[in-house]
Length: 196
Image (cartoon, rainbow, N blue to C red; front, side, top):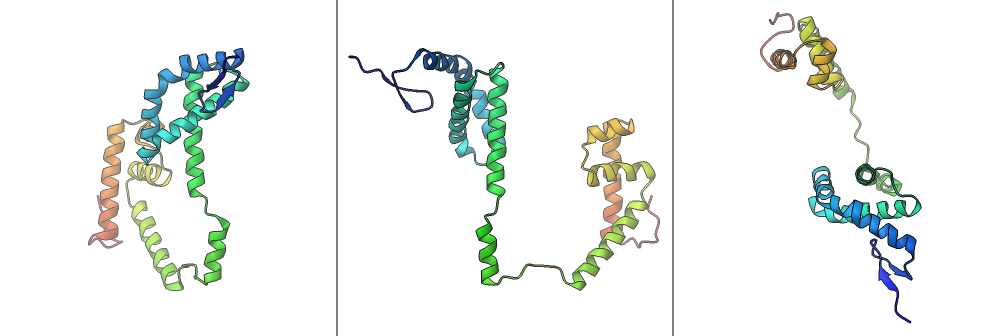
């Protein structure tokens, strides 16, 4: 009897590859493999450690293959890149999780949490008051742009769209506003002195 053991796409040995597995592997070769170059480029561009891209690529292939065993995706390219994006998000979350044991160990060692003292709190409040006064001295449109960009985190195109002005005007307001704020906060201007 001939040996029917074959190695599947995901690296596992399949004993007696059936028609469903053969069809799945054919689909994988036809739909997934041709995207390897752009998938690899995507992973390298979106992950800090470029040397880990091949491991990530392998993990994407495993996830796609396992999901396709249940049901072939209607739009393979979108499914593959969504899988890659979700994998990257998952890895970032894993890296940002601090194990509870680490916090317990710090407490056991007796390390104090660095909390600001009364003097630091007073200094911070004074700086906030100075910043608020400086922002309030900006011309109204310039103040809106600075607040939208620096506090709300909107992009320049979003600000331009919301205010109905050109993106170059947004850039100009931002540059002028930040310059005035820097002068007021770090320059020789006194809080009562008017700045154009």
